[in-house]
Length: 314
Image (cartoon, rainbow, N blue to C red; front, side, top):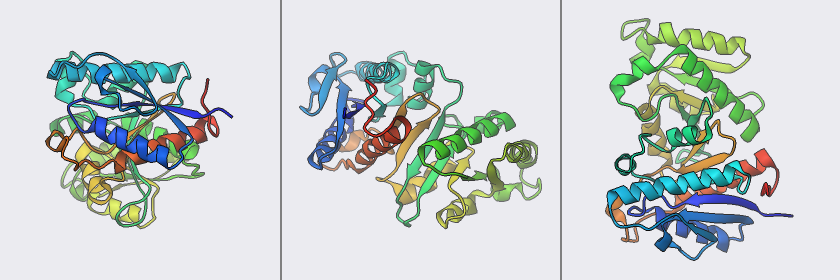
């Protein structure tokens, strides 16, 4: 039986990506993991683990860091699209470095959408175990955009498409027969019948009506100050948050170090750890590879469910 394979990018070479990738892969290999890892990064960063593919020389500059980060992702996507790997796991990148190298996407999610030419993607934060014990899954309806732009970006069509993408993924990759979704409100107290905004009535209500007609279990809009507690108490399988920080703040508070970022809608599995480059702790022995380990395990598990046990897709 062939081994399952994952491509793993080191991320920005100036950050903690190379060290947490090396530590996580070493940890899983020592535990007898049956997954083969193909690591991608600067030529001179080979950690001597798995199979290493260099993507170019790192000259120490921010532009070079951004370029090599992007080239590693592009190589990983090519490997996934031709079936050499069943999924990819990405180390943290630095968005200003990407921009200095000429890449306009604000993050991995948007870059992966362009590289795969898919119409809809979703940024799902997953922690199957949290500080409170229960799992927490949070989909960000809008991602890396200024807060002032969120009301204009939120639309009924966006909420419907994101909820349908989430529902399908939970059915397929998490084996949940009838996922229970919660739609987190945008305004305080879900606007209190229009006192604090009209998005809940004009945007959210039609979306919920459309989703219910499509036989998707969804409730809302539920105020942000209660929806996460209710989810952790078992009422819902996942929350759809209207913007980045309203979802990420509670998620990282109770799941930091155990959380995984999963990109929905791609033709392959993609995960990443829930942290950034952490330039301030590089080479201090303070970097924790727990989230990268979780990302590797989740990618392997999701790939097995989607493509079959130990599917290498050669």
